[in-house]
Image 1: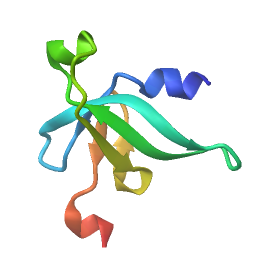
Image 2: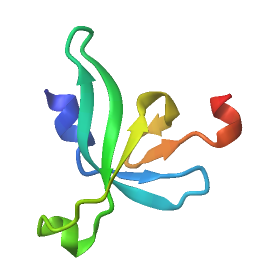
Image 3: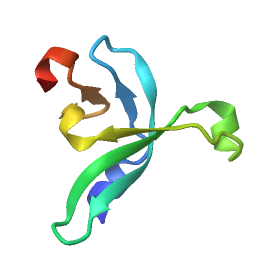
Image 4: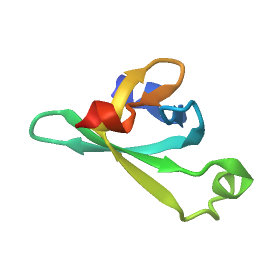
Length: 79
């Protein structure tokens, strides 16, 4: 899917504009073809070499905006 290719590798920023990682993979609901979550890697050289095992799962409903970078909602927006 072309959308997946466009999202993989984008930086994800929290509501304070701090980079929390890069999109490494997506969780998709096959039945609805909807994105359910973003899987983030920490980035850096160790991830590029495949040595980093740390990942963060961000539910799709936490996403505020997708552009050149992906911006997360702040805590008050998720209530």
